[in-house]
Image (cartoon, rainbow, N blue to C red; front, side, top):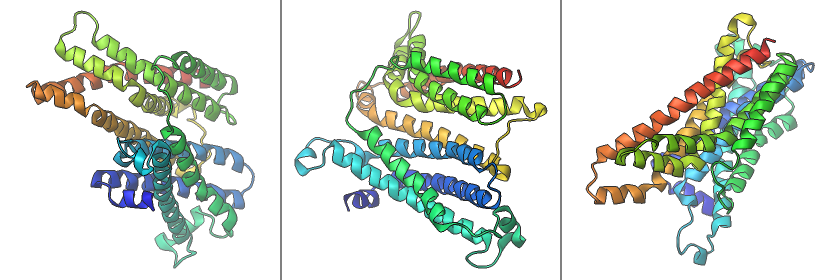
Length: 357
């Protein structure tokens, strides 16, 4: 009941984020049902399709966790412990809210999937959806509900783990591990090539490695901004970027891995492309992953801006123009782009070379 009251009393922007989570969950649920229908019609090769469908699932869960962390209702406040609303209780409430949003999306995915198959009322689009979704084969109800429950259960569990009380680590702590995993991902792709699950395994290791590398890179960007006799503007931008590195670093690394994957697919378009066994839904699945990665980074950036509001108020109290704060934000964004764009391009080039050996 507490989670439902907090969800009902949230601001419009928070409700919009939850609707976006529901939309991402609906897209992932529809893809999982499509893979299930294809497995019933053609069991051969169904396992690789399921593995590739887990990539949008991971992107959706990552976005749901970022939205839960940015929710003002889940932020610990003074005096709430006396009312029994400590960090653990707030984390559980956030997990329930996340599960409700994802369950709503899964329900919408099931309704749309059954409608396109003609199982609800009529056949829309002259039956083309029924042929694509293998309406001639019965859909296993238990398997469909199990797959649809993956997103709410995984997202709620990840939310509890992300919001649990823990000691923050320095941004540079995971940098060596991230570089190592990225190198392992490239080596896996070079060894396995474009056949089997080598591309998926290598890209997954690369994505995890870049996510671990992200905080260290963001911290390094802050150091570069302050280098060589900085003025007040560069000091403000660099210090703020270093303080935000732990929050925006992981989604920034994930977005770099998505961009590197897109650049790799573009580079290999004349060499057979990347073999993604999702059929006609391969490009919608890729778009879903890219949108979730971008939305996660944007949500994390908004969260960090909210967390630094006392500093913003202090600057304004000191009669600093609001233009200075906007310029500092622009400097931070430019510094991150100056590092992440070449990084994504370099990883894409190495991946292309690994897949064409």
